Length: 132
Length: 132
DNA sequence: CGGCATCCGTACAGATACTG
DNA sequence: CAGTATCTGTACGGATGCCG
Image (cartoon, rainbow over all chains, first blue to last red):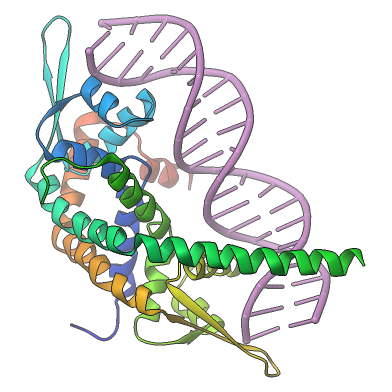
């Protein structure tokens, strides 16, 4: 492993994290991890997602080759989404981060609370000083 | 490992991915991985980041307990940033995703090119290029 | 059922100028 | 040197309505 990190690599990683780190991609990938799912089922499963955002998310994942979209020309139309092999292979790394978040959630929450407390106090001081 | 994924867990993971998946956090974490660094050094190292975004990124990382900020009351002022233990522990999972991105970058790129070709749609990249 | 088009408010990101 | 403050454009995300 190199001691020095190639900027372009890091940027690619960062870009991909931004891509799948959006509001819904991870949830969708996890939901699809169990198997193929229809649009409506996904919409129900991913609580809070709007139709538009689910569509955009699925399109982006499909574009990246992580999700396969299959249209059955029936009446009414039936569209199924499933992870590709590439998409499946991403579940591992995501779960690595997921495990980290799960294991350290308390620390993060504590750090945030602590930071906000200190920051609010500072803010109040500044405000008071300015008003005085 | 459970077969069924808890929605709240997934949302937490997704939220954290959004947090660190922004434009600069991963780059900063990687840069700080080698050791403490001053603000100016970071700004130079993370090419393209504005002073404001670097400040905001560092504040967010500090708030999450991933980065420690140390002020040396000298003249001129000297501020050093370094990863906390928590921040260090995140490097592994990030590199898991990073490795995946690195190993599959070609596939992703190919999938995108193929998708764009099939759909003949103007995407952000194309549009930007056209707008010059 | 699945999904595109449109409108609209917000949150984010950059540039610039100023401060201790 | 290491920020903060402010202005401004853009991109995101939600709600709604229409279509095959």
